[in-house]
Length: 208
Image (tube, rainbow, N blue to C red; front, side):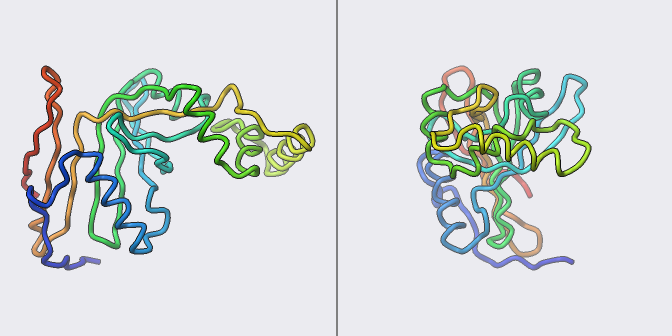
């Protein structure tokens, strides 16, 4: 199952001036290359007991403030983020032999930004956010189908509002690593690092 990666590499001179410009560029290249769900990222969190959990979520915003995603605030991931305000996310672009790793603190997205994103969602996704008590145990599939039918009737003929239990999180990076596969396992790893004292960024190369 071993794959031999191409010779094309990644050097400091190849990077954009900022981590968010570089991440945006790689995301655009993955999308242009036909990578399915190129904005999918594996989000890792931990509970108060230190036990980690991970799941795939969709990145819905990248800027100088961080990486945003939206979810149910009563979900396991949200409960863990409220206890341990630190997380990591990995964009796994396997087809391009690339990964990007984001690590940092988390904060909730303000209600205005949440509302703007909510209005862009398909109606079915809006209804689903109301119908599903995410991460709770249900006895059978019919429970979910009945809940969706109920909220569909409830909001028939009107706009679906943002649920009070739903919104965004922003991962605010302290480190962002760009990983490019190379031949003979000599991969390129370049990491933007934030100096927590003067808030400046620097780039370091890491051994593979």
